[in-house]
Length: 390
Image: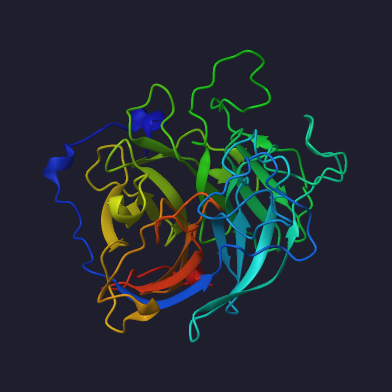
């Protein structure tokens, strides 16, 4: 487990037990694109605080709300997906006119397109949030929360992880906040509204970036993007939130980054002790050198206090024998932020990028990134719990 579980003791060093074998080269099996300049029909203007630009050839403000910044994904089982837009334009100060939203999308891998079927804004009409919000109508904005991870419960409600608290947020199937934001005991970000002059102990934009749901549906496992002050640099805490009691457990798992300068993008459950985790560097385009999906095992067979890891997909070195997307025999997913992974079957993952509209240009220099949806077949099966595939 993690640092809070030191009472369990540490056994032999990591070097005493071989690291699990990596999977080998994964293969691109599907590619679809949602154009960067896609906006919610009939929506309010947005982007007034980011400057005029142009940014990668796109001027601001925008006449509508961008369908962008996918920071979480939920597979619905019918070929469609719920995708979560993050807080807008990168920070609290410039995102007050970006409405937090869950979109429903339908990728068509035959013709390489992504259709937006609709979606819903996140709101707090019942005044569950105890601090001041940006809008009088209590529609939530990127100045209120930085939403980065999402899971869907069996009852159709959504749990969303936030970075400003960090908080857990519970919404109805239509985006209505159901209870007050749930703070993380002992951890506060610089944007936390309850600091009251106190010191944060995690850096800005390093809160709940990933969140897995247990295969039995009874627990959430939110994963911080950054290291808590006092922990070993590069060690990230994955917490256990019991949905039956509404409380955090007293111990946590520890995910160890390959480099302290890396970050995680998403996490999902494979079974009751294994997780798929996206780990990435902060580069894009030709400079991107590290974009990977790991299988992290909380069983901790080497007893070093951290989850064991093995590489299942290098997203900068995917085989592309069919030349999908018009690319060569090797496909690169070279985006700064890759923040979405879903498990389609025991061999296959779906992945999406966060395009940071209009700022990122990882695919083509000087051109705002599209939202890309890809499917990837792993070199060998995961042997996942069947409930993780539902």
